[in-house]
Image (cartoon, rainbow, N blue to C red; front, side):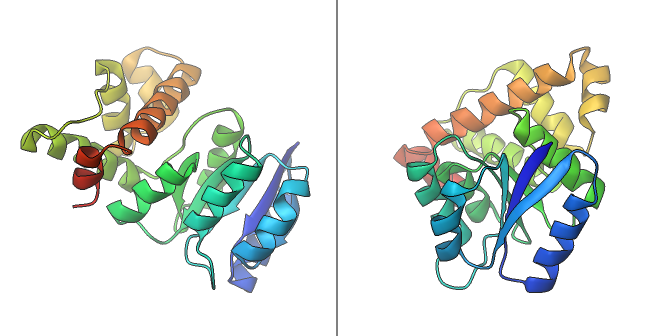
Length: 207
């Protein structure tokens, strides 16, 4: 049973996701929060596996909440669930410590899949988000900026994901296991977290 918490200031959406999660075999929504402030007070004490975090919250935003949660609950797995898909927000969220980035327009099936992936140690992304990550690396190569060096396999997996392929389709195409795909994506995220601290990479990720 994967335990989930939801942080979103839209009451109807929050309740709708909670109802859907609770009605799905193998999942349980243990708590919901309408603000980052209340989430910071309650989440560290909740016994949960994955947090679904919106970015646009009244008061403190979701990215700031992720940063603070990382200080008090460093092993907590946080999946961004938002309408924002601009590059700046994506990388700020990853730098803050989010484990994945999913758009709210994603289907319920994809949401459950993403929760499973995060719980299993993966880093799920909507395909449009993956395309922006790919574009950032390509821009770095073109401009000659100091960049994160991805292995050929990491680039291949990321490009396949950017094309909208499922993990299974990527596994079939590259002849590797789904667990290996999760490992490659986790490495990509780790490299982004490290390299984005440098001035050069911060520059190309934000322009």
